[in-house]
Image 1 (cartoon, rainbow, N blue to C red):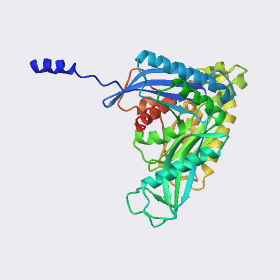
Image 2: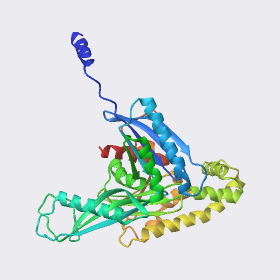
Image 3: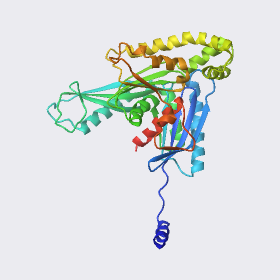
Length: 388
């Protein structure tokens, strides 16, 4: 007992480490969501979750002012409640506000017999990134991440050996934003001053983080969002290809709106009731008939996207998530697997539907993360620690 008492007395003389509290912001197509979280040992505590729907405007440019105000007010409120600045703030941006591509940076090596070093590769990466930023007046490279390094056309996974060659190519995941849009987002960072705010692509963060969260090295990820569907092929935990087409859950809500002659918000509620199978049979039949054309359009775009790459080979595991996945017809199409013909040599491909509550390892939920549409939060949370 005396030892315990002495330990407690001495503990009071040492300052306690400030809690590592962070913020993840999901800037989606139709809403913006925020979680405040803290890591305690091996556990992750979700302290608070906030959601705000966008005003019903069609153009992304019209929403940026709303998003800026939301982020500024939420972060100021969080600081007021915590009496301190969060350790990190990571804002994942949907493809409605930026464009993603796998970009190639190439450089010749005049001293081809000289050993290639990590420092040299880093310099090539930085110069290539800077060259793009200075040579494009319409778009801004807001984030980039090196994926693969090739020397004389051959992929190099380890630079510790005696590697030589006369050409180097670095493939990067690049996220571009229209300059006019980025200038508005940048004002948030200027106004917030010392808050460590980082903007990243949601598609990149999902393709980077989910293989590690799920402990898989090869996978195909399908994110059926509100206004678009994004696909990422990962091999050996490295992003190989990305695709996107502009059809998501929002378009099916519009189908309901047009078929029944109701407003968007009412149509969205009816769509949910349709999925829950609680509507009168006559209304369900009308929606089902209207959905058939929309589903055909989604299927055609999906197949065309993956077929556009002649070298695309589907891995053993497919993971689907996103708010648009609540549409059962999309789930049925992915599960049936007819779309795998021509891109897989397997008789059967495992398709899993990811919801946040099923993959939140070591997470103690005060405010629970759940559903297909909150998986990106887990990716952003994971990525915030990669940035350390």
